[in-house]
View 1 (cartoon, rainbow, N blue to C red):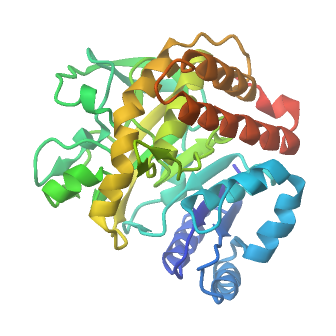
View 2 (view 1 turned 60 degrees about the vertical axis):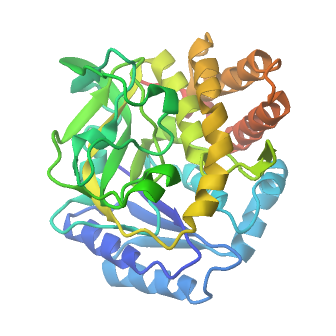
Length: 376
C-alpha cells in the first residue's frame, strides 16, 4: 500500500529521521515523506530531507516555496486561497500526495514524536480501506470521547473541537461487532494531548498509556472530532481532508484552530452517507507541544466554539444522494450554503462553503473519476 507521510513545518523537522528509520525497520518500502515548507522554514530543511531519504531508503519530497509556486500554477483559485505562514500550507502537500496516487496519506505535526517499539505505518494502515469485522461503538448521546480511551492526570477531558453542548453528558457506550470499512485511522497522543486552550489554561493535562482498546470504530451517527495530528486517510477520505483556511473574523475576533475540526464534520457527513467509518486508537505518539501563547489560542478558538454546534447541526441535517466522495462533498457544500443562509453568521459560512468548492475543483483536476468512487 503506497503511503505518504505529510507534514508542514517552520522548524527543522528532525523527528522525521526517526519516522524514516521506523518505516525502514518495519519493512515499509512504498513510502514517501512530503514536507511542505513555508516562508519561515529554515533553508537547510531541503538538504536534510534529501539526506534522510538516502540514509533510510525512503522517498523524501521537500516542497520549497519555489516548488510550491511552480506547482500551484495549475490551481490558481486554490493558490490565491491558501495563505503563506499558515498551517493550511498542508493542503498543498495533500493535493500533491493525491496527484502522486498514494493509497494512504498520514498527516502528522512536527511535534508528534514516535513511541519506541511501535510500527507507526503498520498500525495506521492495517485493515484501513478494507471491509472487515470491527469493534464498533455507539452511544446514547451520539458522541464518543476518544481521550477517554487513555488515562489522564486530571479526570475527564475532551479533544479539541468536541462541542461544548455535548460535554459532561452520559455517553453510555455500547459495543458490538460489525462488518464495515474504516477509511480514517485516528491515532491518539500521550503527553500533551490535542485539547482546547480553555482546558489547557485550567489544568496541565497529561495523558498516559495503556489504551483501553487498541482500536474502536465509530458507528454511523456516533461522532468525535478528527484532527490532522497522527491521522491516516485512505485515499477516498483523503480527497476531503482539506483543512479550512482560517483568519476571518466573527464578533470582532479572528477565527482559527478549527480548520481540521470543521474538515472532520464534512468528512463524517459524507462517510456516514456512504457507509464508511473512522477508528480511533493506535498508533499512539507523544506530543511534545511546540511553544504556544495559550491566551492567543483561546481568543482564536472562542468564536469557532460558539458556532461549532450550529455547523454540526447543519451537517447532520443534510440529505446526500451522491455515490462518490467528491460528488457528496460538492452536494454538502451547496446544502450547507442554503441551510445556513439565514444564520447570523451567514456570510462567514458562505465563505467557508466557497472554500470547499475551490478545493473540490482542484481535487477533480488531479484524480481520475474511477478513483472517486467509494469502492467496496
